[in-house]
Image (cartoon, rainbow, N blue to C red; front, side):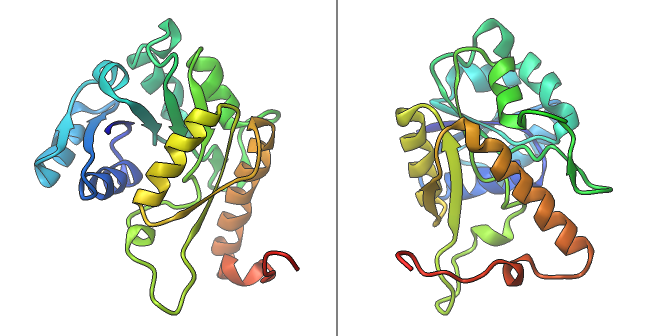
Length: 213
């Protein structure tokens, strides 16, 4: 698959490396052409730096992995408002969280709904926003469970695409419903950040419940 990544930060770089390592071709582009080139030069091979418009045009699926404040700009550069992402699976990894207080910046709705508004006709899936950086992309230790990646979306084919890409990262996709559940998923990011800020491990704050119990 040709995976387009809009973003040039830590998450974008880590995803590009992981998917390229699993046989995909990856196109990276964002607000900084220089940073996109740096990622492509470091990873080489199947990773190519392009401008955001080419990411939208050539990607079979497109991943949005940018800071919240750059969301509108990078989608505009990709031509999303003119329909460049129409009909495509768009995975939104955005965390619209104020890092000072851990609260979501949109007072209503969700970040992924904002992505859908800015990219009319696209099939948006919320996924991977709880896994910043490259650490979680490493194989899980044998004594730990495989990582679950919660996601939501309205289009079955886009969810299937997202699920396949998550499996390629070594995760287990867990669809919790349609985009009406996105705010719930995004709130979890704020919850996790606040716990980390207070020096606690978020994994210890969630009860362990076996499926079916």
